[in-house]
Image: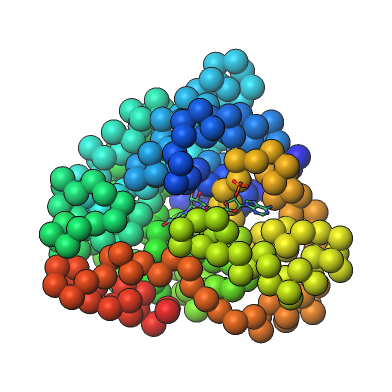
Length: 315
Ligand SMILES: NC(=O)c1ccc[n+]([C@@H]2O[C@H](COP(=O)([O-])OP(=O)(O)OC[C@H]3O[C@@H](n4cnc5c(N)ncnc54)[C@H](OP(=O)(O)O)[C@@H]3O)[C@@H](O)[C@H]2O)c1
């Protein structure tokens, strides 16, 4: 199966469909099996993060495939992310990530959130006493150092609003290559996509199906009557419509499935062609953000007192 590529501003290419590896179960064996299956189905782009706990499984599965010569390291694109408690020292954090993966380099390293936490804060939901003031200049200098040292081929951000992107590019020596954000037919990110296009920053869509089955997600996208009717018209599925919509907007889509049939179905979104009427109908869908980030907002210690502070005018 084919997996189209997108060129990033740092000069490298990235397969448009990526496999997400966040799973609340975080079962190593299941994740490894899923990655073996995904490789067989043509997936060549894998998205992990230190906080997901999936780095060892991703690394194991990919190393095995490299050892048995199914793939070469250069054939796969691996992304991981800097957690808030590692903003103090991105180089050491990335070295730890590479150790977890058993790899020599990452293709893409992202600042997971514009949030800095105390170095010992290790929970995915920070406690009130965990927050520190964000010092983006020093975090980004650390990210640039990671790239300079050859620990990653590209650097980027995640969950950054238009305003925070503008602040970052203002002082960055190396512009972010990617902003990975929630994006699907019911959270279309039109303003952010425009801002990122102005700076040649690729927008990568996470939760491209609206994260059905995840604690923060819902089936609103795949159960939407409009999405279903578009799918019916094209003899496709709702998931394929959602994914092709993201791809048509120029984004990569990071979709998680550990199920062989659904992985195959998601890859099949490449074969779907949406028409003008479909885009129009999707543009009229009510918008609803699933990953709101309430867990990063508080009145005392977080630099974000409200959701508006976190997302600026993009919410
Ligand atoms: N940067 C960030 O802050 C951030 C935040 C969230 C997510 N992410 C990344 O993005 C990835 C994907 O996001 P996500 O997991 O939140 O949401 P998603 O990919 O939109 O949805 C995943 C859910 O959809 C199900 N699914 C997959 N294909 C399907 C299909 N064809 N039909 C019906 N259901 C289907 C999956 O179950 P099965 O496995 O059973 O198929 C899973 O429950 C994550 O794994 C992670 O790598 C990044």
